[in-house]
Image (tube, rainbow, N blue to C red; front, side, top):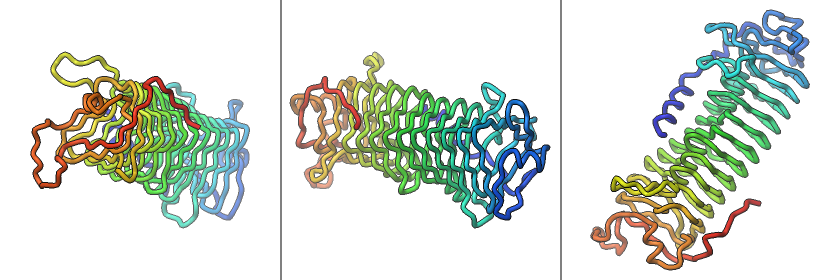
Length: 401
């Protein structure tokens, strides 16, 4: 699972568009364009057809200009391996009830253009795209933003975008709400995103260096072959009040990430609910872990996969005495929490769904009981420290409001 994710990250890192080069560029004098007007200026760049408008080359909307498009179709079809038409927005795009798509289904892998690209690169203007009730379909990348470029997405539908439906990198920004991503993941690299009330199906979120102020909330993320959300490399922000289910792993937090995971329902994920790795230090509060890692016990001497797996160098905080975790674990396989590292994992004030301490200890796997108190603190290193455990019926279900 991790190898496929890293391979995907490498793919995203080599995608580039040169925003300085364009076959057609608007006049940069504060003009508002329509697709019809652009087609009349350069039919070699945009052509009007019976199917809608066809983008044939790289077209740039300059910093002072605006493109408005509504109730129509823009086909962004690759011409050949050397010509990937791209709509580059350095100014502003306002799109309502538009269909942006190719005629290729599935999209052509390896086409690095084939998208809408919002960038503030090489100018001081505010590049922005506002998409309302639009469809982006069969594009290698649906829409991307970088260098201060911002994408606002409201009630849009993304489908069959094999690289990403929404791709933010190099200080890109996005506000997205009430939208559906079907086989069209969200990729964020050194950027800011606020994703609210969205549905991601089959492909989840892949995040590197999430900027402070970012949030992912009230989303439904499901049926992902890898993880529902994969976050790494010092990511900050919040993952709050989402339902993440029926994936391989629910959430993976890696590489010094220090964000907050709070109020989520993480359920029915085949290989585990939460995987904390590579020195990550997330804060984990008020989550419900239910029916994760229900693989049958293995017969090779190894433990079945747990609801939460913490690798050797990571140290998540599942609750202090003064700030209890209030996480709830139900029907989560043989082992709820697995840790064999040298650090101390604090997990005060969680509900492990068990009636007494002895049964709770049975579902938590950590270092052997014969450890020595090396520093005389009274706390053994490599242990999961529990306190103030409350028990509730395991049949309880959870609903987000």
